[in-house]
Amino acid sequence: MKPTALILSSSLFFTLFTTSCASDNGNDPRESDSTVVTSTHDSVTNSDGSKALKPTGPKPGWAPGIDDEMLVVIEKLQSYGDKPTETLTAQEARKQHTPTDAVMDVMKEHNIPMPPSQVDTMGKDIPVSGGSIHARIYTPKSGDTSFPVIVYYHGGGWVFADLNVYDASAKALAEQTGAIVVSVHYRQGPEHKFPTAHNDAFAAYQWVVKNAASMKGNPKLLAVAGESAGGNLACNVSIMARDKGITLPLYQVLVYPVASNDMNSESYQKFAAAKPLNKPMMEWFAKNYLGEMTKAADPRISLVKANLKGLPPTTIIAAEIDPLTTEGKILSDKLKEAGVEVEYKLYSGVTHEFFGMATVLADAKDAQALASSKLKTAFKK
Image 1 (spheres, rainbow, N blue to C red):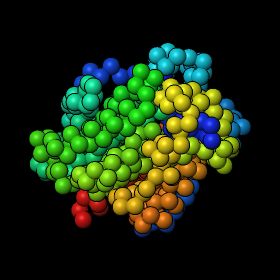
Image 2: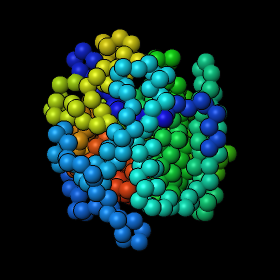
Image 3: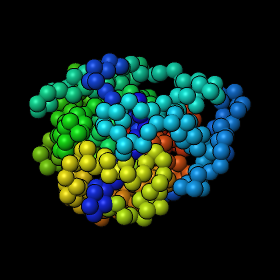
Image 4: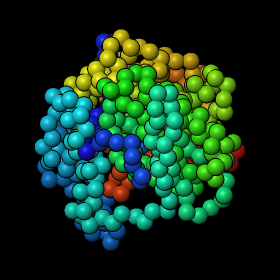
């Protein structure tokens, strides 16, 4: 598996958000005021209260305010000595380590146990135009027989990552909301260029609408969620559902979504050298999925240019140390201007990819709880 980044775009490139990734062969079984959340914890400890996570080195120049436990994960990721993504082919880069690998190794080194799973999983192939895509369905082990359903889209810049890399996020949403989560693995570039992933994402949502009942789901209680490139896909699914007149999600959770083609934004300039994301990687991802950089202006990539009226209530979760921070905030403002109810929260001291790291990051645990609370409330209305 490999570490990845986001994909941001600029006037010439595009803002594509990606994260660490591993390749998936498609056979995996397995109201609304903006808020800044500042960490009040010093560090995360083991379950017995021992061994706080402390980095071995100084704070990096690109993130002098990074939290200790976040830096521990970044240090572990860098310790693998992987080659810069932009120097590799997509196939080579997919074999490198991911932030998920780093979290798992940090847990092992600090004797942090993996919480027991509260969900059952099964794999499902979903037909799409020209082939099929794979999904993993997470079903709560206890609860109602007619569960709400969340369709979840992983990150990876539409080039990297798979269901395994984002397993923790999908599982957490299922466990904390008491809903079924259908985690979708879409076709990726450069083998399948834009808009293949976007079309696959919508096809998967349509499949869930038609088949929710067969998996003990309630087709009237649907939501979408996604991280990075997946956050962009989730919002696009809501837009397409609105435009095509099919069941609209009741809610959407967008975690540091790709939302603009401005690679000169404030956060992009400030965190151009951040980890696990940097400018050369952004350009590399853009080339691999978009092909032609002019396509970055498409409102399916640059969501801040899209028609956002009539979309479902939304929570946007942002990380401070992330080139995508500015566009996430702009998207929040644009949604509000369009009359959409929005909750926006910015977590300080953490980087892109933090959301799925609740076993070692207190902020990730808080962000997951926020997302789950909003989803549960939407399902009860």
